[in-house]
Length: 392
Image (cartoon, rainbow, N blue to C red):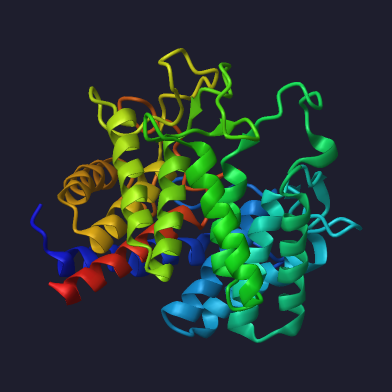
């Protein structure tokens, strides 16, 4: 692949605007009862009407972001409002915690068992407030963000399954999501809060979860950052580690912190060298740091979001550092992703492949896959390559 940044920018832009966004516009919006259908088969037909809060909020965020950053189109704002109004009415319990799942008409199905629903609500309503100018949406965003800060040290609260105190592992997911969430809410937060939370989350990710000897990002560590020799303590989630690193690059770039940018790129490259399937291509979903059998039976599947977040990290790393390894790896991951996940016949991308790269689930959306990773990554890669084309 030649370093034709203009052509790459056009490829990612056209895929987003002419394929992926229209797929969700045409198939997912529930204009009758509010919110979105996310359980869509290959052609976009609805096969289940339950509404999962992560995906509902992510779609509000996505269309609000497009309205704010690409073009202030009324139809995009209407789609965002359709989700925001539904969620504001049905999404929280009496204490203001966000459920995990609702029925089509908004009845609670699954309790608010961790803070990630609140994280995505804060993201969604922050960007919807910016797009719509609605003060009530700001209040929803700030209330959800307050929940996240209040619960971040005990993210599952009373729904935690583990026995208290026996194995007090903490998860990478919490600080990495909080870092990105805080950036997304920068226009709503006091500068002191913004600076403090970003500094604390980057420090925790890079000091506690990064193994300085192997250069790999662990999924779970003890509160002091030490490792525990057990399934969860040895767990690597390559996609999470790589996604966390582009969050760190983004924050470091805003601060002019070149050293941290290069450190994050080092980690991305280390993870890729460790987690790339040399026999069939693609990145493993889960791995054990010591090479033992992971307890996740789906460990060797190839997932859409893992590869898309990698494309974002590599394109961002290439733009910020011009390190040749970023470009070499980008070509490899780009070729694999576009030839295995993208569906030129029906649009959008498949989500789940087996180890050999064959489609495992013939769907475009479900309980975990919605209007988020594909459009966000296409947008961000388009932006990186547009910037690179202007530099070259």
